Image (cartoon, rainbow, N blue to C red):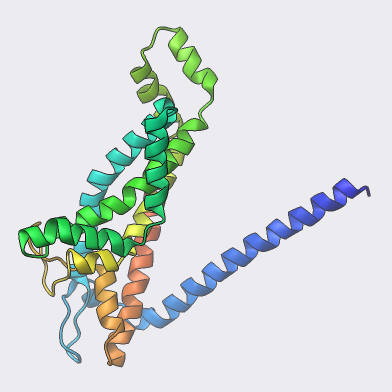
Length: 273
């Protein structure tokens, strides 16, 4: 066996071991969360609001609040992120595109609490109260740079021959982008959206400064709203074992929600050929 085959075999084995190690760690984490939280999981826990120690209670309002804020953040963040990423891919070769790309890269590495403090100063202090809208804006700001950079990279992978063929047939640039480039890159863009969703669903710090939290069901955008991450935080820092168990169960629900959203988006954006 020559040296190239030896090196190839070593590289293959190394990557396989690394992949199994990552999957193994993930399985261990998920198994431990399930083991700790399954005992407190029940229908009442999923629909009831938080109650004093010893009286039961659950995270129903937090589930609804997280979904509402995620929906609002996605309505704002996904279109902007996809639009900016498409612009960078198709027309972002100049100084302006380079600047936007640098800003997006910088924002991806900014701690989430910075976004929370920014929206707190810009919105909460001006309004004089915490609100669902402020929390959604903070989450949207976190989503935009992630979706922007993923969209740019995925649309760049679309072969130039597809663009050239459409242009040769007389299609305008905007039509080529909408009907050729974006559909071809849809699966990759969906991956970026899922990464952004997974990150904002797990954020706590920005919501402490914006939506803050609530013990009740709420659908109003100008009032504080509960979220799963904040509720988990409140349960986890309490001195009561019962609430610690509820924190594990809420964590299990949060992971399940992320998994369900990812599977659903994969199904919706799957290639049908």
